[in-house]
Length: 194
Ligand code: IMP
Image (cartoon, rainbow, N blue to C red):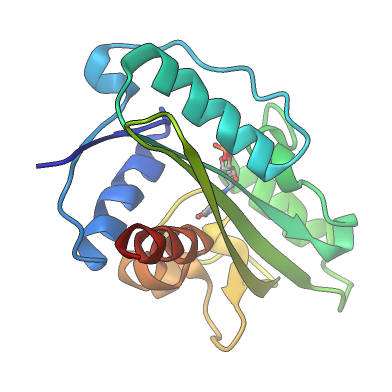
């Protein structure tokens, strides 16, 4: 079975990758830095999702020489002029995600400017060391208050366009086929099959 290195230490992302692979019917053994007791991390000093995604993929490819898949992702909130974007993991330092989500909803409580989008760029470096990039974007809005417990990060406050519940209420199965990460990975699989 093909072995693919998933270039992240984020346990939520790893389990999403596994579930999306299952949803797409892709058979692969997925390994990640944890399987190598590796807690080193690349410095994400790019200025785009694509650059940061490539930095992560290249860092681990150079260490393990395995086909490597990395994603860089984030949420862009219109009310905050598109922030936090590539800084989503480090936004509002010192706050837990429930605290951040409360803070965002509270700041936006009197505003109708609720647009937001989730972005993801996936980088795949194949056995020859060649990189391919695929992007997934989902448009939506920020909920009036955080709701739901599934998913991670900003899922309790993000409502995908065309739906009326947060991602965290819609559940993991919904995310596995509708999320920015699922869209980017679906494009990658289509590209692999070509
Ligand atoms: P990265 O690991 O640098 O790509 O950080 C991405 C950050 O964006 C995560 O830590 C979350 O804060 C946020 N994020 C990305 N994807 C999702 C998602 O699917 N749900 C909720 N938050 C997400």
